[in-house]
Length: 564
Image (cartoon, rainbow, N blue to C red; front, side):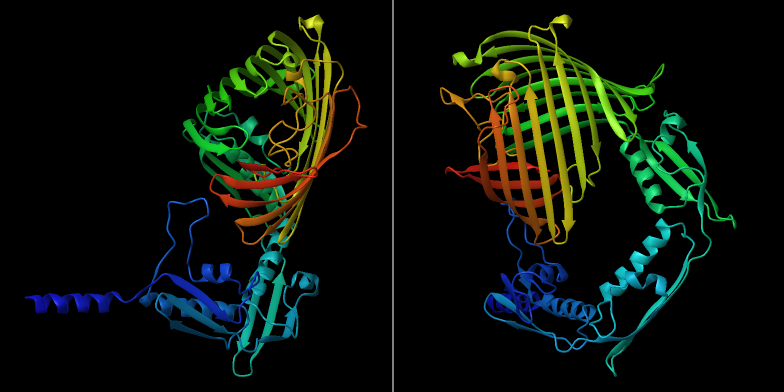
């Protein structure tokens, strides 16, 4: 019996094959970054190591029967990069697989035959290495250009003739642009509790405007972000021979009510979590109701809000309305603030800018053992105005675009405020991508017109400000706690190098001025510099920054989302 068990175990081991814990690439590879760097080759082999924050996951192991697939994938990839004579071999040691790549001579483009109008789109050139990706991306760029320039009914015949015997590539690409087309009427089939007028406000194109697929995509995204539709179908009708192109939109309402929750950690609030109830179509026409609770190591906040995107008033025509009601208790180290707020905001889009104006009531109860922070109760009523333009390609992970805003807040005793002041805060951001780099710059400047209690001051330092300092810790202190200031300038420059699509290295320089005097920007600069890491996760970019002020020390910051 034991004899049979031994044979069974031996057969099972042979069938299963040997396992390996390491995989290594040798030969013609790139040591840091490039077409044949380790990260790229792992992706080609469909090997994924867990992200650095997923400490509960172990590294992958590999079976002997996977090696053939690794070799085939790497060979195919090398050929797609123009190395049609590449040789890929595998060897094994006790716990490692070695995959050796020998590229050999690349195949080159011998001739290119294409319309002169489109030659500047070509990523390939005569007498240079032929890469499949260059040929594919060239076609995509030409197609995109045609669809954005009024020619969506083009005809393209593109072929790359690869001759392995002579070892050359000939490229032929002919394009017939077809009829030039223009947007015509928009037909909406809408079964939701949302008026067509609100849908039409999200449309980016105009009737008789040159057809541009980008305008269609932006319109689709705008409608999707309304959060009220389960089905959105947007089709262009190209049957008109004269170039008129009607757009047909079909909408079906989806589930508009949701419960949301979150858990997280950052160095400003510590461990935190929250729950919220949201109705994206509260009594129809995209009215929104929210109620939420947020709890962190610093305190808690409970709030509700109601939003109506369309209220018609004389002269201003259509404006938006938002009412926010909240209560919070927050520990800022130097003082604890119990705050009740009521904020009423009206919004209006005008001459390409977003304008917001309204009224804010704040009742603060300040508790502090430090005389400078003036414990007591404060009632502050203010009028405010904000104007902004946001042309970033993403609010969470911007790589291109710009953002500017101006905020003005006036608290007055005439509207029963116990404090009288004028607060002005201006901000600008600019982000530009030069692959694989992204450069970003931002500057913020603000002032408060009168002496106010410190809890109404500007504070600098932290993950979203000067990163050489802890949260709100920059500037003069009293009893070891920051006092903030009445005048500030806060600037940052950052460069991101994308090692992979999801992982980047960051270098930054931050500089700030903070004064306890009104309109005083003549003080010394607080400078810092540092390094950081970014990892694009499903919940947004995970951010780690280490900042070093010029006078010594350091500050560590963790968070979610880009600083810009």
